[in-house]
Image (cartoon, rainbow, N blue to C red; front, side):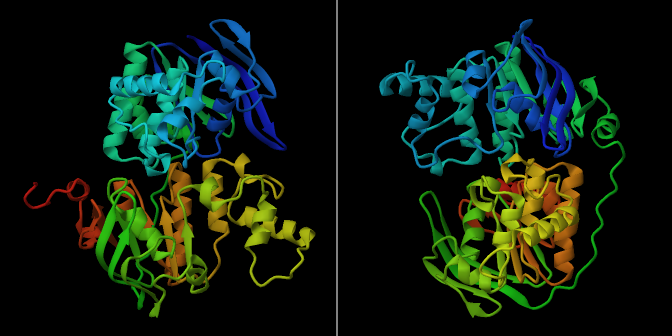
Amino acid sequence: MRVELIDIRKYFGPVRANDGVSMTLEPGTIHGLLGENGAGKTTLMKCLSGYLLPDGGIIKVDGRSVSFSSPDEAIRRGIGMLHQDPLDFPQMRVLDNFLLAFDRRMIPDRRRGRAMLRELGARFQFDLDPDAEVTSLTIGERQQLEILRLLALGAQVIILDEPTTGISAPQKEQLFETLRRLAEEEGRSVVFVSHKLEEVEELCHRVTVLRHGKVTGEAEMPCPVDRLVEMMFGRSLPPAERVPVEPGPVVLRLEGVTIPSYRLIVEGVNLEVRAGEVVGLAGLEGSGQRLFLRACAGLERVASGRILLDGRDLTGAPYRRFLEAGLAYMPAGRLEEGLVGGLTLTEHFALAERGGPFFIDWAVARERAAERIRHFNIVGQPDTSVEALSGGNQQRVLLALLPPNLRLLLMEHPTRGLDVESANWIWQQLLARREEGTAIVFISADLDELLERSDRIVVFFGGRMMPPLAARETTVEQLGYLIAGKDVKRGA
């Protein structure tokens, strides 16, 4: 199926998210859509998949003009989209989520649906338990579920928006192999939306680059990296600078902590984190690092041991107590846990104010919101709703909502889904807090980020926390061995 987008325009108030974008998707190919955060990639794909109605332009499918007023209409024409944040019902079972994708008149019975799910899963080596709750799945497994739903609905054009964020290296390899099969063996069109140059180089046959809502270039792959960088940013990117900071007194101390969960138990954790120190948490997804981080904020129950913040025993205390003690937590799910869908930037900043008057002066609140928008380089207006922002701008909002003078900042994937420039900017803000004495503990699936940004790295494997490593004395290869559960010295 051949798809053409011709002069697509989409505006959000004064923001020109797509400003005359044209591109063609050929059957049997993987087409990369590259650009920094806020370039208009997701907006363009939402217009193609029926989630947004374009303000202008033409969409053609096999030479015929089409218009989609909903994702349902788009999928009936064979176009489906997998979003960066999975669109599922976490409290329901895998099979129920799979069946909900079908039209009421076409929905198979549970027996046929189960067989269909297992058959599709076996075809692509996706090992999904139909009776498991979606909450028990990793991000990679939730992506697999969405891909199977799209295939069951007959999608011939499959759009994936930043699909490798938050998934492990083995899951990424499996995803890439699946996409190659869909394109090269089954003749489907795959659109791979990304800001990661190395992934586009590895996977895509052709690439279109967006910047500020416009197409800055197209290229057949392979293509020189310098050319792609120039099309993305219009300039070369300087390396991020890091100022050495002498660690201060102990801020966070864990003594013999055990954290139970449905799938895993993290046992016997002992760790100290000092003021001004950056500690990175590594491991395959589901190895225990997220469980550990949430327990440090009072968001997970601790079965034994003690958690102390600045010497105060907060074991078993709610998140509110940790917050009052100078801790903040930035989750990976920006719209699921970090922000409130439907609220504007002004409303978010007003609600985050502490110690203010009982009644909100909205004129003053809008002025303060505008000031923070300028300071944090957020592409939006005071009255912009958070869900209308790109992932990178949502992350900037989360950063802008953090209170000053933090003692400890805990973060899940702080640069997840961000381009190089946005990631560097985020880390500039974080390292400025570090220089003020804030201790930082963060999870990342990016080994280069862990090695470059951390003072020490803690690897988790199967619920076991390994001894901390000095980041400057550790290589990517050594880190990879430990993450895979192998001894670095013996390689086994």
